[in-house]
Length: 323
Image (cartoon, rainbow, N blue to C red; front, top):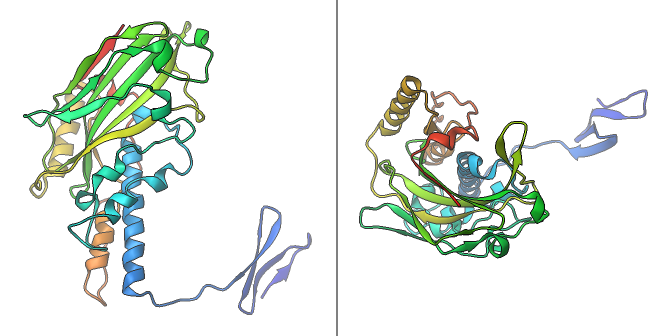
């Protein structure tokens, strides 16, 4: 039964129509009905859920680089095309490890300030014979090769950050392989150089490399440099991806996270290996492939939000170059 309140608003149900108030307006909607999904619609729904869940984890892992300054549609662009264009498995059977990772390369985190527009030089990325990732940078002139909306006299330094993260969605963990920062004054030049990521790559993991640009201002009170980036200016993009090689043994991810937590507690360094506590892709695949008519078992692993702090990367193995 619908009710008319003292302010003239209608609430409740009248026949097959439901009335409710939202932001001062009366919303009228039909009563929800159950409907039978086709196999194709269930697979499509699973695919969308899988890509959204992968996107959430990638966004979380790279938070220390782009610092939550992304545009609203960023998460919806992540990973969907990669999974959809898998050549090895069909809908309802595949995850990002089966996908075409090349679709991720060039993915911008903030369309208001594309990395390709704000950084006029292009890093070249490759893997050496040992499987290590190498970034080759040409000479960078801070005055001409970095574009920002800030007055140049307000900027003290620029920071180019390259962050390599290993993801294992099947074992549900991600790990920071390394971070390389290149800093220069606003009127300086950074010499051509190669950055080598020599950290260990965990088994069965796919690699994703991000590059970002930050404008820095010196805080005289706290005696440190602070980022001037905003949601209108925060260039960051994925610039290279490498597929996973082989599979990790059962329990590998859980052990890797546990070992890292113990090292963190004994040494006091920040955590480097993280559980994918917000990832539901394996649950989605289990449900999609579960025999018809049987209930999907609930996942016993607790789910809680846990992000890497923006300061966690300070102790990662790597180097900082200043000019």
